[in-house]
Structures are given as C-alpha cells and as structure tokens.
Amino acid sequence: MTLPDISHRFLFTSGNRGNHFFKEASGELGVPGQVMTHRVVADQRTVSSGTGDHAGHLIGIQFGAPGDLRNLGLQNANTNTFAPKPLQEAFQGSGGSYHNLESQWAEQLRQGYSIRVTITDKYRPGENRPYTRSVTWTETAPTGQSQRLSLEFVNFSSPPKPRQSLTPLSLRPLFFCLSFPKGICFSSAAGCPTSRL
Image 1 (cartoon, rainbow, N blue to C red):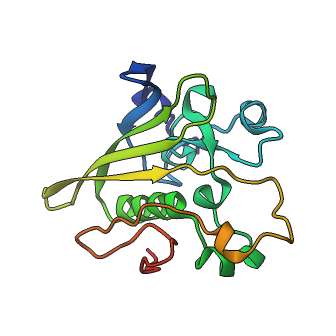
Image 2 (cartoon, rainbow, N blue to C red):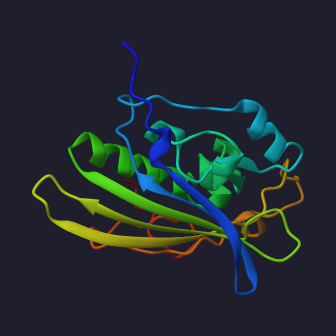
Image 3 (tube, rainbow, N blue to C red):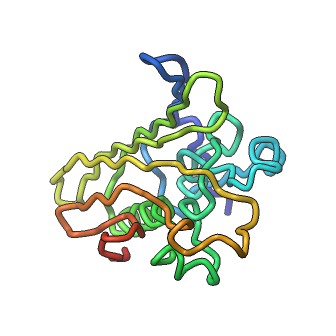
C-alpha cells in the first residue's frame, strides 16, 4: 500500500527581516509511519559536507515534509540527534534537544493530536549557518483543546572531531533551558534538569 504524499501541505519562505536572513517552513504535521517520506541524500551532503554539522530538516521528513534544500539547514549534530556516548558525560546528558521535540510530536500525533508548526532558521549577514532556530507550534488534543507553544534553539557549531585536549567544560553546549507546563526541559546544559520526553 502506498502511503499518502502530503509534501504539498508545507510552505517554505525566505528573505530578510531586520538584520538577519531567515529561512522558514510551516505546515500541519503528518503521522509518522502513515505518510510518505522524502529524503534527498545529495542535498543533505551539499549542505553539510565537511562542516561537522548535520544537514537538519526544519520539519522532519518523518512528518511528510519534503527532504530537499528548502527544508534543510546546518544544525548542531548533538541537537539534531544524540551526542556520541563518549561525549555524553561532557554534555551532561544525551543531547538531542530538537530530536526530543520531534519525538514528542510523533507520540502526540499517534495519540490523535494535530500539530501545526512554523520553524524559522535565522542567519547573520554573510553566513550560511543559522545561529538560531525558532519553533512555534499549535497542538490540538483529540478533545479539541489547543495550546500554542514555542522554543528557541541556539545553534552552536559542531566540531568535526573533538580534540583530546578539550576539557568537558569546554564541550558543554549552551542551549537555552526552556520548560513547558508539563515540566519538560529541552536542554542538556549545566544547571538545567535533564528531563527526557
């Protein structure tokens, strides 16, 4: 059975706002496993080759979003997935704050929620790597109750390989620690609780 292709549901814009360039993706997320996925490996390599960063999707392809250049930006590898086990002690957690948010959305979608997102990568003039990713979404429960939430992810550089001379303190990411009403913290920064979704 062919899964439905909902990639047309997502809108992509870019341009200048104030003193930064932005790249934005928005749309209603599909339920992972119930929608067609679109990965474009060549575009991911084009974006991230040699940087140490991931070519992260603004809207994850598991939600039915397109996988091409419109939906990609350089993203800290430990925010996009999880820190390698040897670095987890230095990062005081597994990392993966953006990945955790996507996992939360996937679980909610499977429970019958609908989720509409707007994700904006912001770039400084002359740079090809976003310095921050703003995420705003509205989640609507099966009961019809809605809430609008937002997070800001600082996008620190990812070194291609950590050096032995680096101390754990110098490896710690400085993600914002933001909590939800449910008490979830999407950060592994020192001083933040390491709640997991």
